[in-house]
Image (cartoon, rainbow, N blue to C red; front, side, top):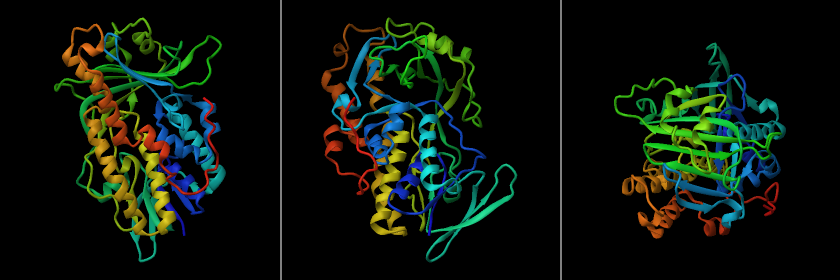
Length: 429
């Protein structure tokens, strides 16, 4: 029998590749007519990169992404708050990658088509219903564009990897309603520009009300020495702001938010220049959902953003979906294609991701910027005048602990899926 995976995003495709790795047949169903590389940049943390490398994807990631060297926090005036090495430079056995989300998705999709076959990646298949029997499950699909039936498929398990607007979660929790907006808007884009700091640095500047994040996502420069720089501008809007709640991803108008960043020209980064020179930007609300007390219902379970949508703080959204896929694969390998495997998966992953959702609502490791803003709104000489080194280190260490990527612990941890990896990592930087 076959595991049915609803959703062909990063989590769903990672699960498909992982199940293929252990010899479990699976099929991926995606609502859209064609899977296309969309979005902007993301970071994939070492604990998740490890899992992608064990699927044999190191060369493809290295050909496309940037090995993040450091993460650095700055005040709204560009003064240093905290920096730390990342990936190999931090002592991990695996790198951290800054990469275009669409490029990562394309890597996973191409690999899934190659290994599973194109006939197991079905588009224009939107889940409409399912029915469970003693030894399996039947899922019904429609073409969402036309409403016409798209077929019914039998399987052993049904996995919801269909994101924050999950059709399966909506049926399991019909009273839940729309995702929760916290009053913050993100404007995101990619601009061709000169490198800054180390050339492989991810920076965050500002505070809770007004923040700017950027990092390079292209490995090599163009003829003019420019790289693709991914950036995110964020503002906590006043209570009177009327956001069009039906729009979760729309084209941004630069003049609507550029004025708030016009003075953010630092000696190491021109923030208004990055915004002004962007060819096309997008607007997103910062949304998540309240954690639920159950993911698994018989032969059905939730994973990724369908299970635990969280704020994009700490670079953990895609990473946690990848970890979900690997833990679920391990349990299916250990127990078979049965509800007990789904329950064991949930028992491990739901408490961990619940903690992360709640920590991200408190700004995760980025809270250092808000603390500095509150204590020294008019600036400071050196950051330790307002925030002790111990406070800085404690905040950073606590987030790594909750998110599961402490250096020593991760390096010593055995593989999640106990099978020989398809490719071994070289530590060469």
